[in-house]
Length: 301
Ligand SMILES: C[S@@+](CC[C@H](N)C(=O)[O-])C[C@H]1O[C@@H](n2cnc3c(N)ncnc32)[C@H](O)[C@@H]1O
Image 1: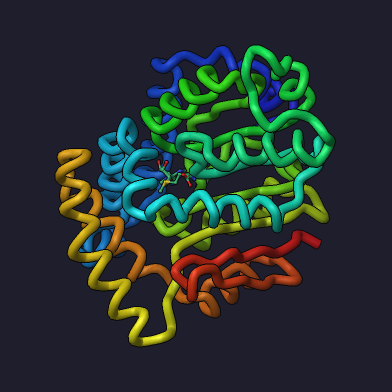
Image 2: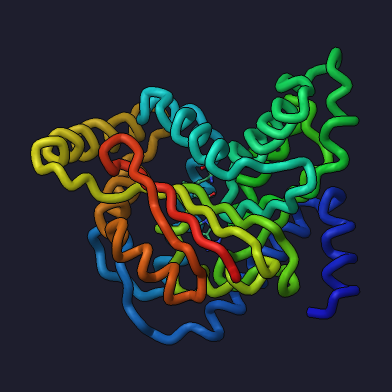
């Protein structure tokens, strides 16, 4: 895609309609379907074709979107907020950081980005009518990209309710990002990459769209090494989360997928090696809450 075309796409994103997003999502999926072979992969503990995984992941997030934020709070007892706060403090964004948040869903990371920058430049962290929020937000260059129209829609509604303006909401696939090369200072992906069918391809796309010197940062569920703690964590995950999903969101299966997909994702060291294989340098990770989640980061040098 030429630079002119992409600039036009970016410019028109805030005016994007939901029918446009639907077209964008289905054309993105169709492109993947054409390229994809009949290779198998995992969907939680099931073995399925890659196409089927993509469809089912898409369906999961379309289904849970309206209850996604509530469920996050209930499942984690609010701890996901602390993890995301730590993640943002490690990122240490500045007002000029050009951010791409992939699999950004309902906007938690970009909202934190804005709050963090406002705080660090001495502005208000609260975006309401009394704080002239628009003047804080407009200079920022922030894009959320997600494959689910419903998740993006909830994100846009939250942004409007909280007075955050100027965020670009783009429907797209992490494996085939609709952005030109060398565009962003920072690529973030939070609780998103384990849902992607081809993680290597997503990492390669992350590398492509980052500017030289740009930073990749990922927050993802990881592996608890201590066996006693892991037993407790497994009991909680398998016995509490799917029933909670059924009660709150009427959806046992999506939350069963969530806990199974966490167990299928590579451990800290293996994921670090995958990031290095994609070309990133100075790759490191930090465990939070005994490795329940980990922050991985690397640079395009
Ligand atoms: C668990 S949610 C995380 C949302 C958000 N980052 C957060 O932390 O609250 C996972 C997100 O990944 C998105 N997703 C899954 N596969 C994707 C893909 N191939 N490309 C882009 N987004 C994808 C889903 O639509 C969903 O919004």
